[in-house]
Amino acid sequence: MTRYVIIGGDAAGMSAAMQIVRRGPDDAKITTLERGSIYSYAQCGLPYVIEGSVAATDDLIARSTDTFRNKYGIDARVQHEVTDVNPEKQEVYGTNLQRNESFTIPYDQLLIATGVDPVVPSLPGTDLAGVHTLKTIPDLERLRSDLHGHREITIVGGGYVGLELAEAFVAQNFSVRIIERNRQLAKMFDADMVEHLHEEAEQQGIELLFGKTVTEVEADDRGRVNALIVDEERFSTDLVVFATGVKPNTSFLQATGVDLNKNGAINVDAYMNTNIENIYAAGDCALQYHRIKEKNDFLPLGTHANKQGRIAGTNMSGETKTFQGVVGTAIFRFIRFTAARTGLSEKEADALAIPADAVSYKGTDIAGYFTEKKPLHIKLVYHTDNKRLLGAQVIGESGADKRIDVVATALFHNMNIDEFEDLDLSYAPPYNGVWDPLQQAARRAK
Image 1 (spheres, rainbow, N blue to C red):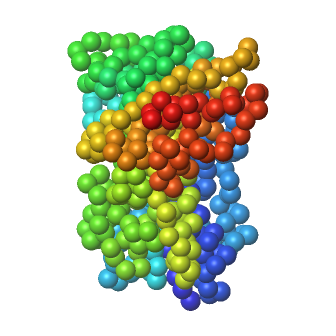
Image 2 (cartoon, one colour):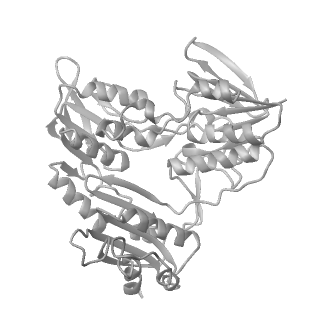
Image 3 (cartoon, rainbow, N blue to C red):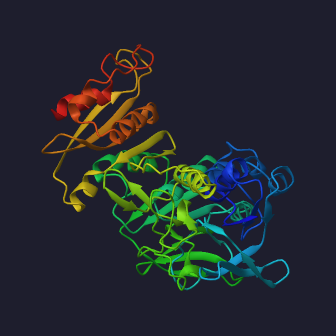
């Protein structure tokens, strides 16, 4: 019997488990350990339950715990928190939170797929009623139940989750404020591109505070949040959501010898091996190889987690498959706009000391003579010396999604500006101009 233990019951962990079910030995014993109570749910869909596009949290669950147990024969455990791993004995230790009992489970092969936890600043008052984070379905349920009877919501953090939540709250007619310590929203975009999002936020009545730091969460006489102290200035609020980033859930590995990055993410090779024999890692708790940066990076996204989990499970089953890396593609919707990016931004290229130039172009999503055309703002970043395409950012009301995927494909295959201009892209007036705006930007880069 081959004993497989997987820590984590979401995207990476259960993608791996299903590969072992399908490809592994007949005598495989698969045990999965989930700290929470829900398996295989779509974390990225949580804001859209608030916004109204998703009817219920149950719609976000891909497979139930009972499905994994009864249909696939996986020993899928809930409320099992792992607290330590002994690589020499090949044992996993933890606590059954339902019974408040310790457990020990031996393994032949172990996958760490523990994901990430929200980062909450160490401030007075972050434990008050009315202060939230959003990472799990129980987080969402607590937040939704707390919305009733309140009006003013403050979001601390202007990244992906913060902006998606802002959109959701605006759709439900709440008054929204975003506090961001950087000088812009969406710091993964260059400042000149993100101005379009700033304008949209202001048009929707979202209050933006940039370059500001929350120093205290203030309570009313009932012990509920009623204000934030921001650089000595007081801002009243009914509810606060901290969307200030995430950290890998790997603290239990500190004494194991597993190689961790400075932020706690696990270093892995292309086969999802860690530096310790028979221990694999995948998903948000692990690093991903960035094909443009040519080094491991920390980009916790569901697409990467599913791919890495699938590859880990394949290799744990005895077959061989490698992770081909990422190019940094991401996309989100913000009110009327879609904001998409891939590869390197101009500021990232500068930070990496890569000689780069950039070109910006304002086109339209369809043929320019259509009355319903929408502006499409494009920025291409390319290597100064060899004209290799390095990245792109696209923001617009329509058409940004398909353009960014074209650039992501080009980046994956190391195309330069000349080759990019020669791509045979689809054209008909309701869908595009005779020259795609991406290619028009590339021509200006030349």
